Length: 373
Length: 95
Ligand code: SF4
Ligand code: SF4
Image 1 (cartoon, each protein chain N blue to C red):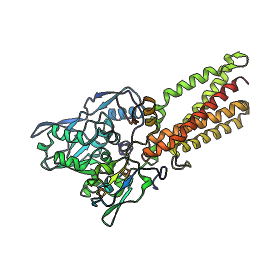
Image 2: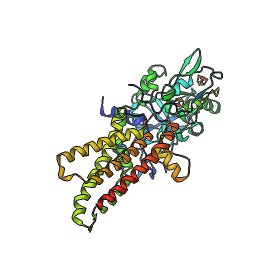
Image 3: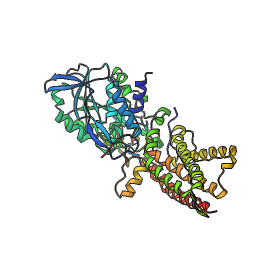
Image 4: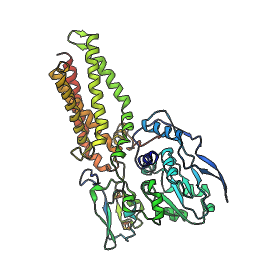
């Protein structure tokens, strides 16, 4: 499999993790190839080759770098050499999804109707309702699609069904919605199969590859909080019975920071990677296992370097802190997963959040007490 | 691959088979293959796999399905509680 198609698989179907405060700006439209004539005038034809700059931008999105994200202007686009009988694919205006779609349409002739989803991918936008019945019906009207194609059929990504009601679209616009496969990589096979998706094309998965690509976002989403906690912890590390000492600060401070960062990394990487193997259905419980892994790792290191081992109270406080933080990170991974339900998460949080808070407070208090003993 | 299962017995999915017309739309839209067709009407095959996305209910013309739909996202729920708004999962760039 080429690097590109691997990327496609990864970026087409997953919900992205939290990352707010982005400025949405119109893309520089490097992906427009030329303009073709239609009954309603010139329509941009898109390239099906993803350039390096597209890849770099998508990579930055994954790591949450930069404050700007590109959006695709909503409307009608052409791919290949379409006629009035060519299929119409509906898409969100999130640059990364759009890039996946256009590379997967390479070699096909068709039309792409891009909805205004405020730069959000299909599944998330459908959940919010921006990829929805009203926007679709409206976009059909304003784009002039009715005059460009002679048929009345739209291929909507299956995950859009959370926001789109096919029978209402038909009532309101006359267009029949056919739900395409979950992953745009399956579109060609879907068309060859006379627009029928196999059960496997209809299933959302959450395999190792799909989980691993979420790690950068998970990592980045806590970065500010992490730095904040580390700074406080580092500064407090200088405290002791005899007042403040810079020597202690550099020795203990560094060790504390290293311990916390290790536990953080193990949770942020371990939960996605080992998700199905971690015992328990609740994500907060799965997080605890990642925490135990961190504790075991720390124990192993201290076994080899006994002179570094923290005191008893400090060690116990660390166990509490690591468990609370890992459980919280695990629980938050529900948002990135593709199979958790609202009812389930509410149920889990009802007992997990109070536990996490109490354990974290206990750990923090013990840790501070440990400084003075 | 074995499907990943979340908490058992929590989802709010309900199917009223007497209203079902067997159009199969729910089978098509469900991303977790929760539904099947038996005797020309829909049945819930794997209730615990449901993630309450709401696609089936929204697309069932006979209104045979009901589900409290939402996003199973802890961060979104926490944000909702902290800001006193409805829970919203900040999936990706959103102003
Ligand atoms: S969508 Fe509604 S009517 Fe159609 S098969 Fe499912 S339950 Fe029955
Ligand atoms: S709510 Fe979503 S996951 Fe649950 S049965 Fe309906 S379509 Fe399937």
